[in-house]
Image (tube, one colour):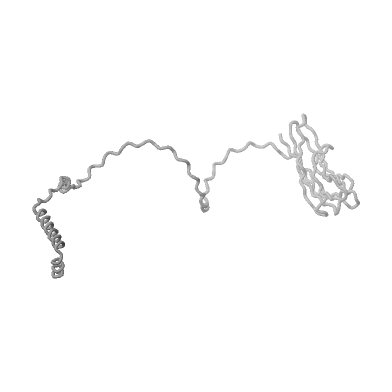
Length: 239
């Protein structure tokens, strides 16, 4: 390589002179840099190198500050979905029996008379048939309220044509006071019916009373008859 450069430079004096100038400049720069004193470190870099921070122990916790003012109430949230029903609880223990209440005031009601029919009575169509009663009379005291209650057993006819208002009518002193409706169905069947409760108002003086019964049969054809039995009437007084 050195032989190659020498051969090329001997034939070219300009190139040789240029090379010498370059080499001389390089030597001068190296000598000047070697004679230059080293740069001083900057104050900022010196302080940074000298400052060493060491964390000290944690100080005591400061006092808790006062509670701040209460914030505004936020909007109500949506209602949650209802949960499933819980199992049925076991039955509780029975409570202790309460003490007995005071005795009630003695009542003033009493049965005045018990009237009843004897045997059975056929009640043909289109007629009102009397039903005999035993024990049918009593005396209603002044100021007493009497109630008539009772029942009757009827055998319905096998058929009833054009009927309306069939009934056992109860009379007190000849005046219709109460009744029991007489059905026509089911046919040819024995039925026991209640007699509607009726009141006999208080007289101003003691009054003798008589109760009677009659079956009104409004069926229109032959053989459409009722049979009446077991009439029971009680007259209850209230003083």
